[in-house]
Length: 396
Image (cartoon, rainbow, N blue to C red; front, side, top):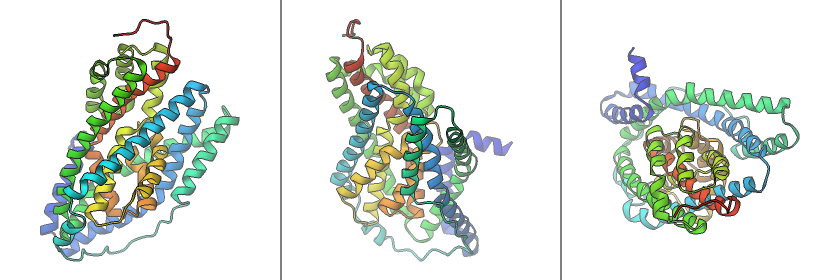
């Protein structure tokens, strides 16, 4: 019964509790006890490193196959538009963070001032070498996805990739997500012992505030552009889409919000056929809110730890991120899980950095999803301008 109650508590509350317990345990646990959890973290980190390339392959390739099944100019236009919106959101997030984070977060000084001691080492670790690199997994996913979509509608390879996706989703839901609170508990325990927990938590609060403001500004910009292109009032359009925003805020699921998003897009005056095509597709491929969050959190962590960064580094990261997370909706924590490999390979993140990214991302998961699905309406307006029925009566 107690286990069932914990499961019903939800992932975010469990992570918040695990963070609080990890900080408290860092002050009272003897070294031998702390090393037990640090050993678990070392093993879990190795497992994550092993599974991430398979996760990318298992999620991205089937998503590309599904998109490739739907031919036509409207598909190509919508995919290009969603990708451009996602990349621009990431670049805007980087520009804002680069401009304001250094004044909000002292680069490296908070961590240095915290002092602390050397954290205990794990009792042992087991190397779990990945079958391929993250880049290799992305290339293979694209190659298989595009080729299978082209030559096979019911082939064996399509079935293999579909089954692989189900395996990966099962691993995420049954293994990774349930163990995340324990993993984050160990990370905060370790950071408390080394004196880094305080500065990091202070950074969390500042970053969450900035990201919320960025989400509001992003939606305002998207609807200003979308409504202008489709000849509508942006304020009325955004107000019409608010039910979709609040539904996503409650469900934290793009897929679960599709019926509401679809209804509100039609209420804005988007052509029915355009809405029926664009909204479900964008729920899978348009990830502006998620990308904005990941970029801002990654930049903040790099600044607080004094790591070097530049526009070129983040431009490459954002470009790859917009592709990697297209299959994330519907998978718990899918966007941040799919991005872990890029964070490690392109930004040089450590296992502790990745754990903090997971905690930060999940803390704002509902807001990112709400931003994604509400932005889908703005993209539908743009698609409607070029592909909608021009003879219909438009809303004022």
